[in-house]
Image 1 (cartoon, rainbow, N blue to C red):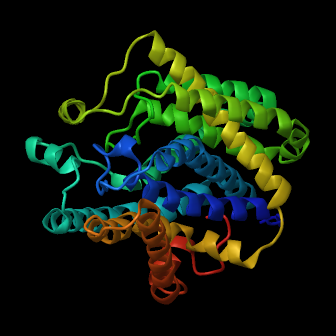
Image 2: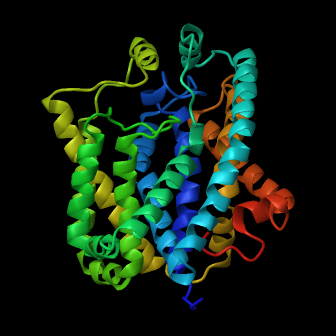
Image 3: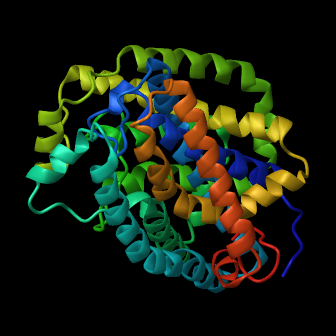
Length: 385
């Protein structure tokens, strides 16, 4: 096993993305755009949280897949392809199998409990009543499920093709990588509504594999040629301009939020079916915004976060556990808040801080250094697993 220095900006970006994920799910409750979709939608809302959640949605999960691809390449470099797939099965598939029924049960309980105590009950509960045979969802565990599929594809391709390294080296070139990922994002998201949904179905979804797979491969290429990210820092002003213009256009041309009737129809069909020239234009803008913001965050992370930080390292190690439990915890906190006559910003602050603190406290006292911590992060100090 060869020694490889620790990439501190990866730790710091992962902990940053973790915090942004909790902020994102908290903001969904308090923006009017998602009032007919989100589980704990509150009658107190502000357009500010629509802007915040739609902006975070563009780059948060693509960034996670870049990090995942980077870490996959690092594991292969330090060990072997066999050790890579063995470790991924242990760290991704086994937790998915264990936590899927546990989280499903927690969602059933919190939604049943929330329907009894919330006044008014969020609009999505009307959808639950009219859908007789709902499709099985992987909930927020879709990230693990899709990542496992990508890791299996990665492993198989490395065994049957010698061009894998060449493809990754091509993706290491910033301009080519950005153009390729933007093109693949546009093609993959063309059949999806805007904002794009989570690929949370049990069966593999091609659009999700292509879209997030492009960012996964970008992460692999970034690991093979990390100096390319440093070289790209000189373009950070241009990246910032493109990111700001694209997100402004994206927010300007967002379609009207779905009505309750549209949500019910989509739940029956299994998806929305967008069409038309306006949709194509918006998907193109969305693709540019996704890639530019993801690249900008990577550049900022490399520029300002590429140093050891004990708090960030701790959050990076806690991120897996917080990711698993934060959504049901958030719902348990937000349903009672629906009944309180507080400002929307007070509710947001309470639910965010309470969710983060309860997630981190349970990690520190119940998970870290114990069986669950070993399952998620290994027995040694967690590296890039």
